[in-house]
Length: 100
Image (cartoon, rainbow, N blue to C red; front, side, top):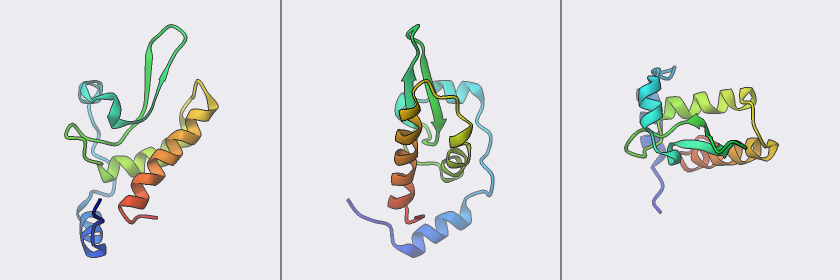
């Protein structure tokens, strides 16, 4: 796997909006499960998808990655272990993008 040159990461960060452009509920609902940090399954079988940060193409959206990190402690988790898994998932993106 190739890593991005530091100048490309800085350019991407400079071009990214400071705040995430709000995604509509319809857009979020249309995203695949892989677009979220964690997907939990409730006792009734309903999926609870937390912290979207990939767009429809599967690319990490930097503004939504930042927003997901900021909202991590606000999520009501079914399983406390999911919070740790989500944190690791988001940190891995940050590491790969040279943000950590």
